[in-house]
Image: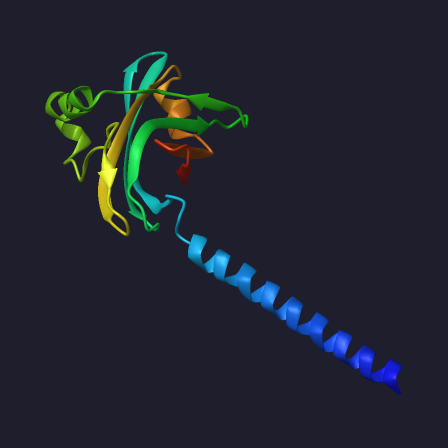
Length: 166
């Protein structure tokens, strides 16, 4: 009789211990949710411009939200394309002034829908923004237009990486 009561007590204690441990792990997970800066959004438009026979420029309009509880401070921006062969080409991101100048020089690009995203831009927690990024690629405009995918990679100062693609 004593042996059965001891087993029941041991099992009850073990069950309570496991439940407490699961509760603590659950609280830690809930507390950490939203702790890593993360941009979520979409590319809304891609415009291309041929510079010469072997190079072109892509102007990408996008919108995003910082879904974390902390600010997202931009460390770097990168734009790449996956061409028809499946190879990734990385472009040279243009400075904000150069990107703005393209719109003055080439009215056919239309209107700017957002400001260029630049280094040290601070996106508040749960803040949203429309922006653009411009990059030059060493591929002809026809290849840039025929791409499989275009990818924006935005890195935060603490190392978090967010990507948008279309």
